[in-house]
Length: 263
Image (cartoon, rainbow, N blue to C red; front, side):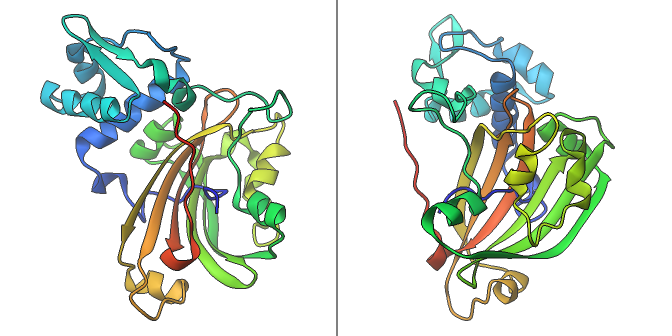
């Protein structure tokens, strides 16, 4: 099954639950992507980066080391940090999906269901427009207090509940989000119909396993020791603008994660 077609809020897997250096690593990766960095480009010094993100140099170095372990950046003795040669796929927007072979885009839940012949339905628990928090404004690169579309819903394949999603998107990128019935319509299809179209082209995606909360057990119809897989996704549009922040909580027995890894 693909990355979900929406990104759940960090309220379910909060950014505050992540180590500070991991949060800083994510912000730095966002900035690398937004600035269109290329393999071999040199990063600012550790001191400069620590000042930019308001953390100690020890925390900044831990963040850099985390990105280095993911082969996104690499260090050169006495020269500093550079974007690694093998990381271009992770930080640049893929080509148009209608373009040459090998082009990629982020596949949504509904796209996956249609491709594989599953019936799909959704139960919207709530949807609303509210002001972005400071943390959300940093992740989505909008002003604090900017209009944010937020939705929480259950997704079903062949009438089996698969995932609980919490999505957050900048409303300014797609105003129709506020009045679309997402129990019947696809989030990604709505984004593609926006003016101008919003095309999810690349996403930062992480998955962790844990035991479900009591609420999650009830909503996901879990009656045994089945764990949940929590997928956090930050998707970017064709202009490398953060488009969607989602935390998706999957039943562990109904989710399969597959990825292609390049060197």
